[in-house]
Image (cartoon, rainbow, N blue to C red):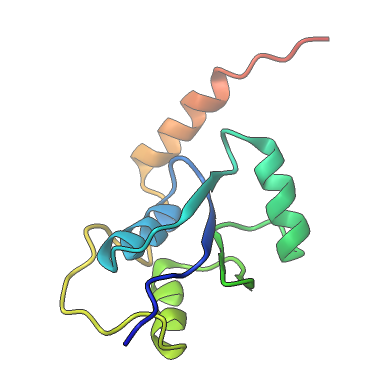
Length: 119
């Protein structure tokens, strides 16, 4: 039987197709996880880069195992291979292996425009 007492931390972007794919897998399997938004909090981006050794997201830590630069599909495959979740007929509620949409890119650009730099 799969262990529902997993310790999962997901380093995700606020608006990102890849990040939403990871979230969709977490919802599909009803997994509790800590989300660290690397856009809203640059310290989380630094932490992710230090832990993963690279700058690409999403990164997901499952019980101290770093899955770096992964899609939702890759996270689900790892969880299944390790016996941490069981197979599910339930469909994910968002694409799990997809780049950002034009709308997500626009949202990121709009959010970036709100950042004020002070000298």
